[in-house]
Image (cartoon, helix red, strand yellow):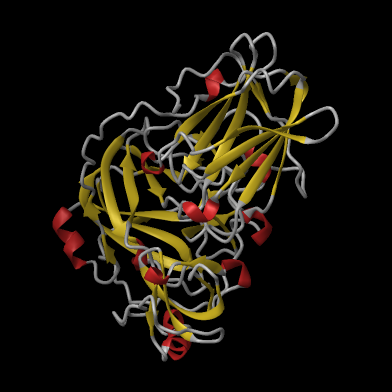
Length: 474
């Protein structure tokens, strides 16, 4: 913030292209735009989750004299350890060092860092945040950093650089390496504090509550171990405590055996009832596909008079990310003409195969009566380590497709294309029993109300207009 209290936000970042890359440092410029806690590409993330200490360097234009810093942490908060400003002589001035005010358990938060006015007698243009990333497990993502000026107004960064970025691994839509091994069964043979291990030893390492084949790279003086996950890129190497290691001399062989598991499955045959009708705007196949981080897909349909019950949805899709599917569901929604939810169904992520090949999947729904005009929406909640590509047909004359998720505004796609989604309808709900094959969807369980922890990011309507009114972690 400047001497008048105005907060300035970063509006530009150093990047290799003219658009904002998912998880690039440029995502930390400007006002907050990450809608909720989670691994979402509208925030900056480092290349590896816990591989090293990280830093984020931000620039503000024009320079201001701040009285506080607001750091918007949207995934695994709590890693902030130090803040420095750069003076007129280009030397760093430490203005804060200590424990991050945001608790790691809150999901997302805004850390309020006061600035010692005696230390900062100059207008500030460059600010550097230091993160003790290995201390807080997982990616520690930052959405925005505001400087609070003397009048209380926030200013956002205009440029950003970082020690590393997940964007360097390529586009979030990049096809995953299909020969990466999957996780392996746990041996339960914990590595004891006095057990001798040497570089080159093969064992199991725990990551994301699963066990993976790993090779010892080095043993640190404090007893921690740097490991390389066999079959994965070096950027996944990390230093772990012994509590995350287990003995397994056969781990490498188990990893090799897991590589081709995804390619051995045969798509099940699907038989559709003769009296059913299939509503579709798209062709049978396509080479185009997309995955939407932080959003979802929807397609508009109009049913015939005599076919009122939707009993299945077909999607042209393929899963990406870790070879082993996450233990979670994706959502299939039936929406009315105004895009209000009629029914919410869930399907297991593992129903969509990770083979690198797009194909049609049939998702069986309990027969549900639909209005004349209705929509089918899908929410996959994708991020770096898991997601589902949905096919795109660019050969349509008119688009019937939207982006968004229930609860937020849906927007028409900006081009003439349609998501590759079909709806199956019947006049007689009992005839839906004749559908064979496919994946059964189940009604979603309504979430339990959660207590309001009082921490949230600024809405886009507040960005750059006034000081954010979200409660801060002091």
